[in-house]
Image (cartoon, rainbow, N blue to C red; front, side):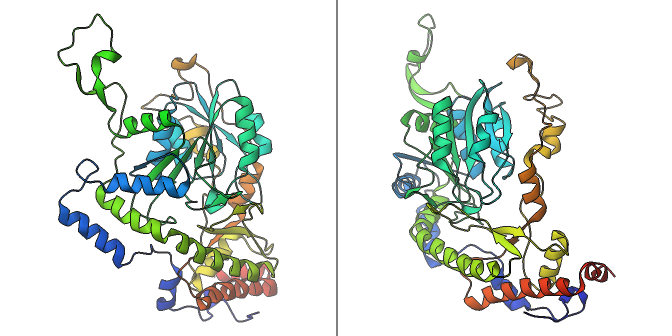
Length: 437
């Protein structure tokens, strides 16, 4: 293992700017995506009404995931919110959310004036712990949002059994896991609804975008209405009182609160190309991550996120737990980055510890939905502790492992990790003080 001084203490960094550029994540965009976008632009048909690109993308995506329906939207957050709106959630309804995930999962609940109820996670896969879900269930529970965090599928069999026993919906948050599998099934086809993101740093990208997958035709219908400004086409008289006199009997009308979550034809055309490349992109990323796993596990200083054997982990983001006891996690990351490695962290605070929940910051100057007369003035207090989420927040490290890296890039990451670890093994806490001088 390297024994020279680390770059933060005057040593020579392991990477130069040219190699650093290969270590940083960027979307894999080729001539095919450029040609697809250009084709749509030249057609002058840019939205889902004038172009058939969106409809084709939806059919191809539903076929890939293995569901009857797919609705593409303009973000993963929009997919989550439209899904909960399609389920009819409202004031006083509760949705179980893991204490460690991206804020969009909780925001989607709040957007429906419903209440997130948090459950702790497992220390190995960082996903919601099925053994703790029962403790979060109440008579108000209407759904659970299950992220497959960083590309690692959650334990869906146990979660589905609990949901069916207590009669609530399962919304899979697949925003970081497009193409991941659990017992041979694509995530997004196991629960009642699947939600995906096609953001720039996701498994496949349309720049910005998302999708909703489901086998439930009524949910698909409702989600489409929500995502399209609440527009409904049909006989307006059939939805109103017989006593009302209506001038128009068949037209476009509105009986939903709706949003503009539409995806453009340009984004859909790019998505269709990316979908064809997805399996290859995922396979290369998995191969590189497994190589890093083997190298770092030997040191005993880093434990990568680990899925069950019956799951296909995509390593969308390569995250694990730092085991070095002689240096703080933040200092270790600072040292890695001085070597030219783009290391970092995800989600430094458990969701329920954030001010929006602790201080019940609601709509306007109110505390709704946490305390609201629309649901019998029940007050939700977030005073529970989530020790596993805390530990993961304090010790997790994200390393820049991507599908387009060559082995020499990966070796630089391992060498940087070993170099920093060896330095602190030699000097202990003195090294931390030395780096601050």
